[in-house]
Amino acid sequence: MALRSASTQLLGRAGLLPAAVCNAFHRCMSTSDKFSVEVLPFKAHRIEPPNNVVETSIDELVGMYELMYKMRRMEIAADMMYKAKLIRGFCHLYDGQEAVMTGIEAALTKEDAVITSYRDHCQHLSRGGTVKEVMAELMGKRDGASKGLGGSMHMYNRQANFYGGNGIVGAQIPLGAGLAFALKYQKKPNVAIAMYGDGAANQGQKYEALNMAGLWNLPVIFVCENNHYGMGTAEWRAAKSSTFYTRGDYIPGLKVDGMDVLAVKKSMEFAKAYALEHGPIIMEMDTYRYHGHSMSDPGSTYRTRDEISTMRQERDPVERVRKLLLAKGYDAAAIKAMEKSVKKEVDTAVEEGKAAATPPNEWLWRNVYVAPANMDMRTVEGTYVQPTYDPTYSS
Image 1 (cartoon, rainbow, N blue to C red):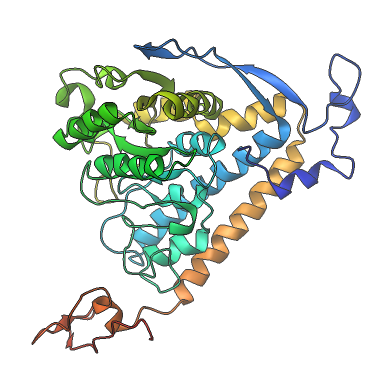
Image 2 (image 1 turned 120 degrees about the vertical axis):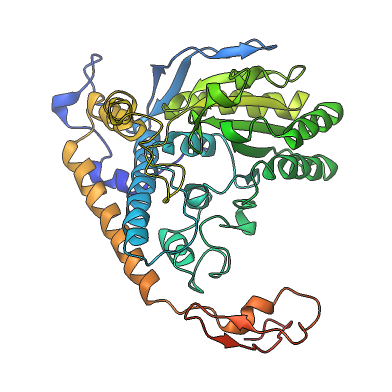
């Protein structure tokens, strides 16, 4: 599914590039015209990889850039809100890895299912959620993605088949296989995406899920987001084999440049077609996170600042798309106008999140079967209350 944006209107009424950037065929290129881009070749295990030429358009690149830029600004805002103590508890940021989810989404429809780990803010956004829902959830407000009850690790959007972030390392992998089982059982022409990091790639439950998925030919794509550090441990310190795309043994795999949104898109289109016909496949996305593992991790004790700076300068996924747009003649002023609009949207979402109401105390006991006996609830302020048991969701 191509990602499109209203911001393409910034090109002008005709939707054409300025005459100064007409191409070699002496005509202006429509924003919907397709052109080819070469990406890094894919490495493959037990499968013939797709070619490394990707078709795209200005319209698609603009939509991708807007989404990725929005993800980046949102995560930077979350960093600031956490440091201001407006966000509490765990908080895992996604900046640096935006190309992975944006590229995946470009190959899916909302009928396909997605499940991921606790680094899930941008997945909620790509599945159709809003910045306000993310910011409100991070602040524990009732307007949040999970009504303020989940926090950073538990975004959720059932209507868009996003089955959330999961706080237990690797626990989402067998759940992803279960989602694929449901899709196959219901005879739906869709796939499930089970996302996990290199730190979870050694979990035993992953291999149980791989075995069942392979045995039953489930339409599941296992996506390993290899950002090279599981918390503060480098991949080579934790894994005897860090070629994660080969670790399915009998299940084929591809290694992809996860910092290139077009490479991710191309590989996921291939993987979806394969999974629907043949069953599971593993995708290793070579990516990088700029922040530490979580907000409690400075991210500089186990890697150098030069390493982070080099990644930003040479492989930044957002800047890569920006440069490609400019190289294809897209107006720099239109990009700046889009960025200004996104910044305003994020700033507004932050203020709306701050102003939103907190969930009533009784919401904490909404999803239990019977009224808790002789139990008090500790509030953020340190006081104790005994909420009303309300299983009817009337409040």
